[in-house]
Amino acid sequence: MRDNNEVMDQIIGFAEKDNRVLAVYMNGSRVNINAVKDDYQDYDVVYVVRETESFIEDENWISFLGEISYMQLPDNFDINAKETYDSYAYLMQFMDGVRIDLTLKTKERALREIREDSLTKVILDKEKILPEVKMDDTDYWVKLPTEKEFSNTCNEFWWCTNNIAKGLWRREIPYFQDIINFINRKELEKNAFMESRNTDRLQCKHRKIRKIYGQVDKGRLRKVSYDIYRSGY
Image (tube, rainbow, N blue to C red; front, side, top):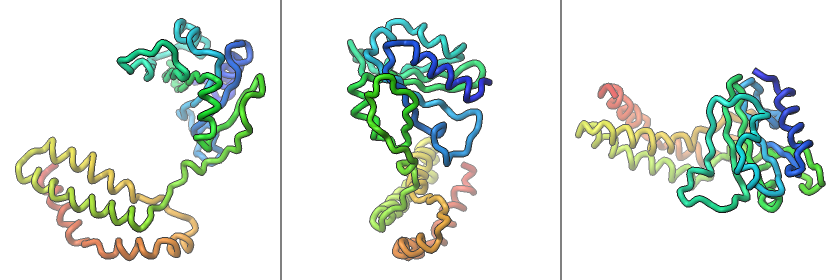
């Protein structure tokens, strides 16, 4: 597997040489100094280009990045094909294990969107077209819910538990699994807070939420879990 320096040299080297590419920026965990690093992190790359058509017409241009094992072109999924694209993505898994998601964006599209992700790092700006971007990972911080959001989530969870019971009683296993996996589990995930190091602040801000949680019928929750366990599903 190529190391980070080798991949970045390839990405930047092509952009420097090709006059169609105006700038390069990245998103994702590769540029997040707070993220745990490993070899399998994607490279989320944006090439800001003068136009996308010449790239799309000849896909061989991406061969400089290495031998591709498989690839996805999500913009081709649209059954109503466009004549021109102001954004076009190549999701590529390479034979050596490297994964690169490379998106072409026109200058106009890039300027509209570059500030939408706080975890954005400008790598190359050949013509000084991109604004100054102050990079941080605040968009990806876990946001604690409001009291109403928490209450609504609890309500939805218990409301749909009735459907779980009906599905089990009727032996409608696909229906039961859909409710568990796509409705109730999602409601639980909404309130799966990341542990805060500042526990005093957490306790201070969310005393009301903890009060609501304390009113949850734990016995009822255990009974539902036990019934699911006994059903064998």
